[in-house]
Length: 253
Image 1 (tube, rainbow, N blue to C red):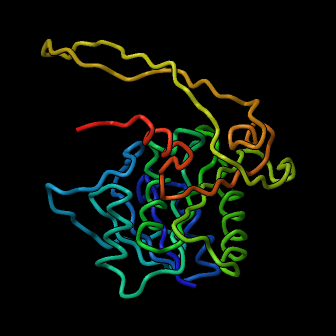
Image 2: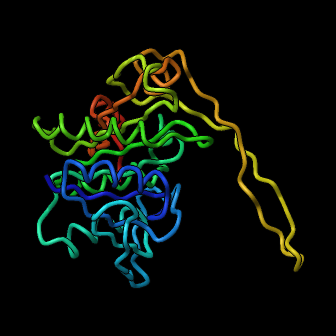
């Protein structure tokens, strides 16, 4: 099995290294990842400057690694269309430090990398641990290995990616695996107005997440109840059930 691994926390992140070391036990792994943190870059791609690639060693394994001065989506696109001689069997993105739940997937570089893989016809899986402090990546990497082994024996749905969120708790406390839908996360955003040493005003985004943990069957609910959440996400964003409603508006030129 040939697997491409990327992320949005950067090629030197602990989550990526743990994932590469573990997945290398069952597959031929190539790493193409950003040269620095690119969190919350969503599905951005680089069009107005060159992408530069540098080969890099990944600690603790023989995986081939490349760091790129681009976004997670750049990395997947570049790997599949320029760097690799053959398409991989699977693209893994992660392991992200922090959850990617609900509407946050819209902003996530981690999820967007898996989305780009799906766009290019390769199964993509985004992997996140739902904590930013004292993160235990090895347990998540072990689950990712088991998941890859199981998924490789299945027919992966076309134009679909899997968004996987793993609670940052001991394995014996995991309640199971829940196949979920995207939940709801809203933010009470605030912009702090500051002044730099040259007297120029700038703004710093802050805010508080407001999660709906009562939506049973959602990814947010699953994590709250100690389940590993696996959400299938479709490339086609069309809301088909209101097409006729919009047609009935009789919009005119």
